[in-house]
Each structure stands twice: as structure tokens, then as C-alpha cells.
Length: 143
Image 1 (cartoon, rainbow, N blue to C red):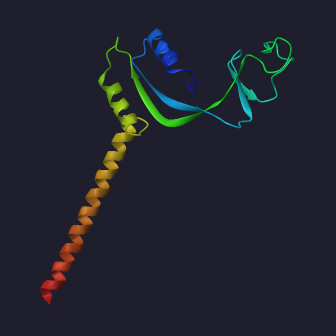
Image 2: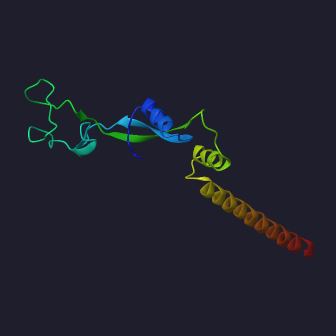
Image 3: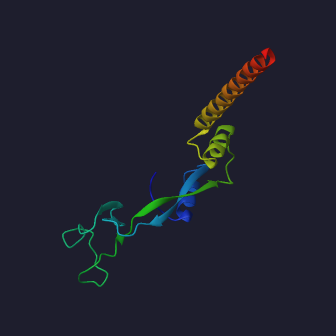
């Protein structure tokens, strides 16, 4: 779910739904965005589309102006937090996936595929180096 909310709310929803673990990302407020978030209808809209015509419009001053349901939009940051529900035990697959995400991968399968690819590449480089060394030795022994 791509919903921006306080960490405490994520934890509450995780516990209410008996989720073992979640991965959350940091967020920073967008400055100069052309969009706004309506807390009344839980929707993103373009700035300027909020006003008296809206059934949820509730001006802060009671008469006109900015609606009390007006909210900001946020950008995801590189900060990652993995939250565990201490009331529930995790299984091995969840643990492996969290390890992979913590190391910058989508999931365990992606992490493992990367490791296999790296090892295959290292193996090929080692083979190439051995071949070059053998050729060098053969050429220098003949001289």
C-alpha cells in the first residue's frame, strides 16, 4: 500500500491485521507540488480543485479559504525501516525476504539471482585470468 501515514499508524494496522512484519519507507513533504491530499475523501487531487462545490468542504475560518481537510503530498525517501510484530513469530521465508530488502533487493529470489550472477561472473573472470596466465607462460617458455 502506498499510503503515507505516521509510523504509529502503520504499527497499529500491522497489529490489528496480525501482520508479522512490514517494510516502511521514509517520506518528505513535497514542496511546490501541483497536487494536494484530501483527508476527508482519502484522495489526491490537483490544487485548486478544492472549494465550495465539494460536499466535504470545511473552511478553516468557517466562511471561506483553505479547507481543514487539505493535506500535503509526500515523496518517498531512501530510508527503510523494517517493523516486526513481536506478538507473532516469523517464518524462514519472511526472514530471508527482509534480509534481501535490507540489502537493497526486491525479495530473496532477486537477491539470490544476483548472487548467482556475481559468482558466475567471478568464475568467468578467474577462468579468463588462468587462460591468459597459461598463454603467457607458454610464450615465455618457448623463448
